[in-house]
Image 1: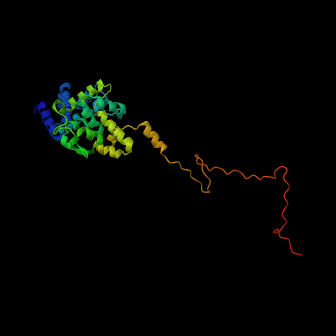
Image 2 (image 1 turned 45 degrees about the vertical axis):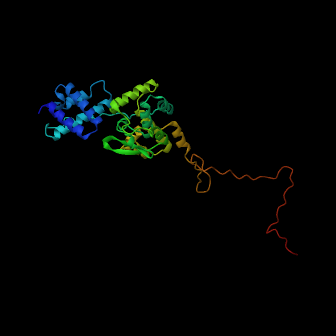
Image 3 (image 1 turned 90 degrees about the vertical axis):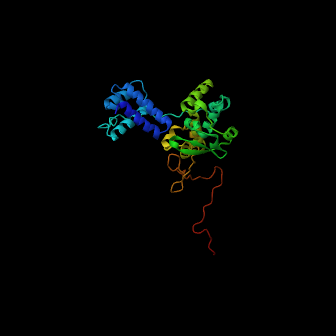
Length: 309
């Protein structure tokens, strides 16, 4: 079988088992690698694959993204007995630094929600108050939205229901039946590009995904429960949720200020100072008679009683 036919067969399997966005990514990466590697991506050994993956000019994140389709393809070729060994097994792991969260500020969020052009404004309201992903926006129908919650159709055909915010319901209640996103914007890339253009016109960098960061950060800042944020965002791992959240300076100050003040006592009842040592008791001081006061009379020996004569 020709290498191109093998690649087509593998990609048909990917499109059947993965979301359209993931499948398109695999197709783009593998067809590019097949064109740029002299022997093609199917016949390439570990040296050719590593040379292509570590070419200059790509960030670590890009290399890590491109590595996954390469590994998947060659593992499949080896399992099928088409190749005698898995050429991707020795590819180096790509270390990607932790991605910093980039939520919009409250002021930026407000500017988007009240001044962005339609339909970006509608999409922004949903993203900001439900934490919806771009692909979830493109799959959303009016029937998915009720006063109690909004049903989001996430990655891997996993649905979740996010409680409805009253302000968001006021925006959505009068929408007509049918899909929320129509036309060419049903393509997540088209929707993302349209939002980036609109945000840039408002003087705001980035795209609509930053509103998902804003949602996560504000929920965490309000309730402090990372597991709750994880469920609302639809993450399978809480480690992923940490990328989407930003601990604000105010929340850190509140967290420290909220610690109780403990005034412990030592075993002998003496109060302890912050260094952990018992405060020494002041030495007893015998006070003599005040200057000019009459001398005190000494008590008689015994119990002080005079014997009867």
